[in-house]
Length: 421
Image (cartoon, rainbow, N blue to C red; front, side, top):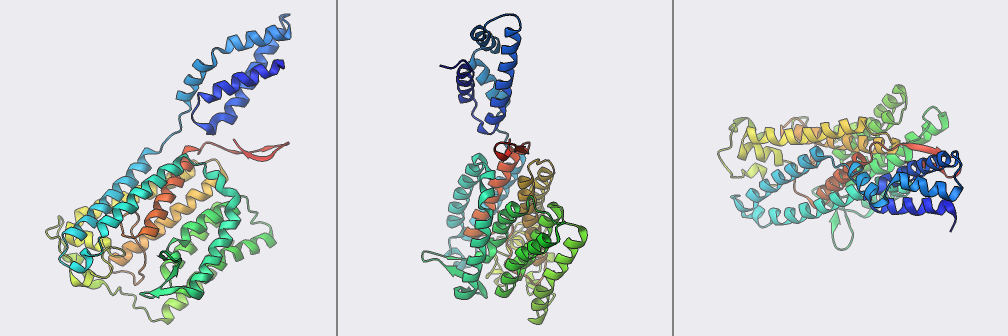
């Protein structure tokens, strides 16, 4: 056995005691450097190399004891504030679904079994969220271009062969029909974060190419009539451009150019700028709810787009304010986290997700208050729906994963290229 192999065996045994694998590379470098320093100090006193190695290992101490100490020091941090806000908002949404299913005056809605289905979606979503906390989000980086291409392809298939339900295109995948336009912004965030995390916007050719990459999915979305999702995707693209250090002129020019067609389409279809749901009469709601009945004007979208209006009407303004506060706290929390992330891909990823949740929240709030004609936007973690709930939980898991590794940096190795440590 080589003498230096004793160091390798010691370090390997040490790392076995440390559960957080994210710090293994750093610890290996640090311990190896320290062992060689101790070895050189021992040899400078006249000891032979083998004796110096033994003395260095002795001075370091038992690998098992030191490993347990380092395991306590380097425990993977969980962002409990973000986690609790997600779980509380989800429980709130589940409570609303319970009342909709079991205390609604309309049997049509009861037969949908919104509570039973939501419970399954929430439980599966929590499992996915906690699994992604353990998962190293940086592994997604190399698949960014593939995800972008897949998103464009599925969008095209949705446009060409999708089936419209209430004027919303659904893609039939055999066992289910999926509202793919609804989840597109989340997929674009993951794709754009990987593509643009080291993008050179000062290069004229690359800047035009980058703008084209962002415009393609937006143009396709605009043709589907999913105007709310198109607007959210534009906001996401602007946030990604700004965070990846495009110039202010480039960002504003893109935002204006990307908004022309969606706005023209919206106006050409003669949408009233007053929401058709202004008959909610939520202004007549009590501060604390006095009824759990559902009015006829709510029946079509009360469990999805208009869940906030139902909360105001049935539970009162106090409950609605609490629901809004949970979502606002969640958005503020992840926005703060984004500022403290060192890894450029992680920073771009969490910024993009913050943009999605913020845009989604603002649009659904305006719709529920009768200030916007745009529908098809759900309240994060509360509205009924399988695809958006799972995507929101997955996004929360990625946010927790980024938070766990927020102090890592991208470094350059002369022998191995770009690495994360």
